[in-house]
Amino acid sequence: MIQRMETEIEAEAERLRSEGKFDELATLAVTSYGPGILGFLVSLAREHADAGDAFAQACEDMWRGLPRFRGETSVKIWFYKLARHALFRLRRSPEVGRRAALSAISECAARVRSQTDPYLRSDVKTGVAAIRAELAEEDRVLLTLRIDRQMSWNQVAQILSDDADPGEEQELVRVAARLRQRFQTLKNVIRERAREMGIVDAEPDVDGR
Image (cartoon, rainbow, N blue to C red):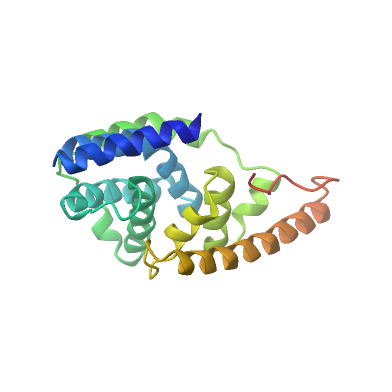
């Protein structure tokens, strides 16, 4: 069901892109993928305010970049990459991320944020989630994309490979292989930490299947 919905969203996005209807395309992307991307940013930023500011900036970047977007990758993957970079920029220059959004997409982004925030704030991190929260950011990114967002290894590789050409299949395969190895290592780390804390007797559910 999720995959079919995503396929339909991307088909509609491609139609809007080809017709030059960028405001409609931006609205479709934010309403369809916004809640998941905001949750992704919260898992990285730790602070809801920073995640919200980065989300608003990512929406702005996406809206402004759509006329140059050629569909080399899916809108979803591109949006996630923009969100990740928006958070990095916010950390380097906090004042940049605090500027008020003025584009046509800002109202839609604010609406998604207001509807999603209460759910995210109620998500108390306990057990394995608490262990994950202590990991390095790059490891949290990997686990969030693979487990929480249930992305394929190819999609994860596209988001985390800033230098890889999305059309270069062999390079993405190599990146995905390295990420899979790292993922296996993280599973062992989480499993061992969970046992030390007495959280679980069996293996924690970190397979991402």
